[in-house]
Length: 553
Image (cartoon, rainbow, N blue to C red):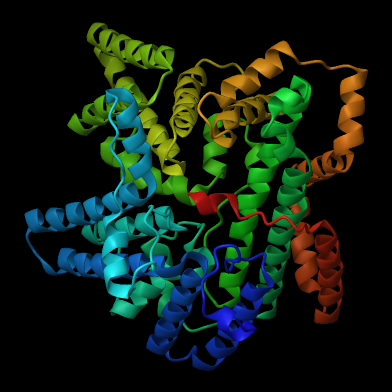
């Protein structure tokens, strides 16, 4: 097979992603054509939609048909919401959109999870049958689709975008796009298609009709974001993952518990560098094409509370869950039948999937306690609704990340921490303190709690988090031998970790000053600085392929 043939075939081992040279060849070609057609709004929407479909094909193969089908169906549902004057019909269309997108997400992401859980609980032997693969093979030929269900890259992102589009039309926050290709371009825009950030219709669609503009400042800023994203992904995330974290986390029993703690601190840096690195590149690439994506991370490890952390981390998902789940359930004001139905569904769900019965007893005990207190003190009822809504949102957010009881536990732990903080801050003597020492220990506690919960996020196998915790508790072993083991095997990775956290904790004013200074330099100076950074990045590049973490979500 020739190099030219490779361009038009799908290879799951060589997806078209930011860290591959093929992507940048693809992007430069797209940008060159875009520079000639950008004045013709419909033509550029069609072109970018086709380019995005090609990008998705190179990432997920024939699953591009799922993306296309989702775009077509949600486009006509959105038109249906707008064109009818009947509130009942509008709600019907919205319900149809939610059901279609949630069932699509559920089928491809959770079919095996729920089937295995059902089989364990009821001692059955049901098997998942991929009906879409059978239909596809009958149309495109035997072997075109594999028999098992493959998780489409980015399915969680484009289904959430589709839901928000239809709901925003129903709420009259946006008008429908003028034509199909504008909508198709909005959903499939390739820089953010497979790993976010989640783009809202009200933020992006108005830009489609705007003329293309790219001045020196925007160009320089875009280059900064792209280079910054590469440093985060390749130097910080991939290097410490390959040379330290993966070795320890995949076999924690082989290392002292102290080293496991360091590995989890490293994992917090890895997942931040990986995901925020992707969104930095996506934002920079988008700006080069004249489209602005909103910031997705804001120095999350500077957070002084769990609530502050979730305002800074994956902001597009957090705002989506707030606007389309938490607030519709009643938010912090009230609760209705939806709150109680969702609470019971989660309780049944936890019984269904988990062997952690103590967790179920805690969940049920707290539920009974809340109801009992609200009966004695009616004014407390508003806190019951707020806390239940918050817990529901975080558990569903955990499940969104993956089909595993570990993700459910991770979401529940963060939800419980948010509930605790909401009550604690009312009586805390430190809540309004601005002293340096108070800020330091609040950041330290928040960071370590978030890192602790990520044991369930990183370790996929059931029971693996407990094994690591046992290793930490019973075999901590902080001594000279442990230190020697650490420095002999992982010294460079540790230095990179320290460097990464120093960069992260630099004052925002200093970072902003550096960006402004770079944009003020002549193009030749910028080119030299970028070349130096690329050489440094190349030195950290590994032969081991590390896909972006959030591709699996």
